[in-house]
Length: 169
Image 1: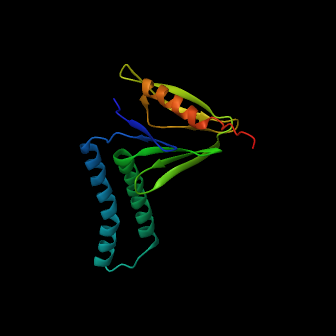
Image 2: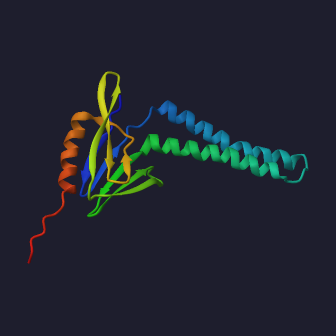
Image 3: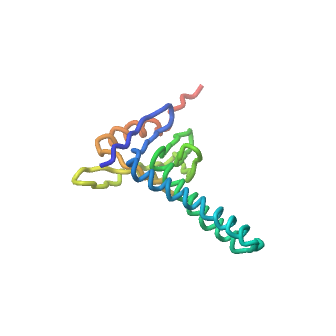
């Protein structure tokens, strides 16, 4: 069961993910270290055998360090991951925040914004994710929250996104 948290800060909805178990993160860190060391060992072996560098060593670096970078992203998401939804005057901005870098920026218009809750059932407990859509695009959050909390947040989001009634001067 996920114990993700959500809070409003000014015009932002921040959904924080729960950290994954330490054993899983430690295992992934160990695999990252192996992926970082294998190309270095390959270079040392080439130098020891007095063979010149060849194209295959670049492929080894790209392959193993690519795997290492992908696993680093997974570790950062499972440790520090959060989704940030910023409600501006005319648009909604979505970002996935990994603490050390941000990813998945998406924009949609606030004018005809529809907010829906996509139900997710985990171990007989009802959770859900948000889906924001306008006439052209949609954004769906990844981190799930309890349905009761989502209904409260939907009311707050609708208050923020309501068009401001401008009085003529």
